Image 1 (cartoon, rainbow, N blue to C red):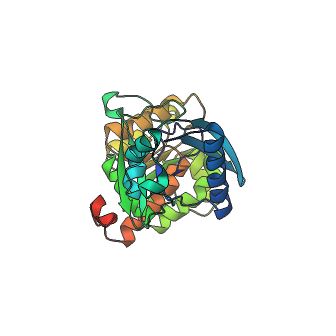
Image 2: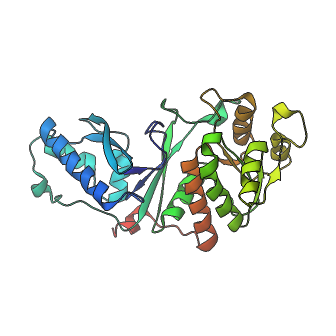
Image 3: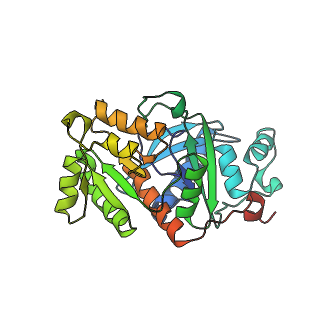
Length: 296
């Protein structure tokens, strides 16, 4: 199961995908080998939860827990196997061979888990994710196309992605280089880009058309909030400029919740959203039951 957001965001708050969508074959093989070695060394019988991190094709272990986790039901639905039931039988002496579960299952479809947050119950709260878990539930999207599966998960998580309109894109200095391709893709998909000064300057320098909006602290009009209130913003990509977010950034992100504007607060989610929007524009959204996906 591959997380979409980078390490540093609590695993319970991060969206994730089965099967992995961007890991190399060598890293997948190394993860499999390391997981088996850890299970043998710890003498685990039943379920075990491992969190790995990958940087520059180097594998790291974040933590290992000899227990089940909240993702077990998601994985079970994704692959069509009742893992908790099988694990309980293993713990009381049954063998995997006796239970008919001896091979890794790689489903032919993508399953995306997305966290659900109680932001609307806390007006004015900053919705940026971090190491502290803040979600209160999970939803799931399935499709043969991973972009469409992500789009379905966003719909279920009350953050439906638009297929046209205007995008407000304003990111921290460390994210500006990576945001250029996201902006270029959005323009290619037919969106108009609106940004504050620093981001607009970078996008303009890269040849990407971009309209200027002002920060609240600049005391000029139109501000980002003006555009949001007027219904001129349909998707927001806003990453924090520092650990302690500026006051106007918090108002933008909390305003997105209050005004029910779709949003992404990190570039990994923004990149996934672009893929999902492309899928929504190029394909028909269809619905099938989990039983149909597993031929039941």
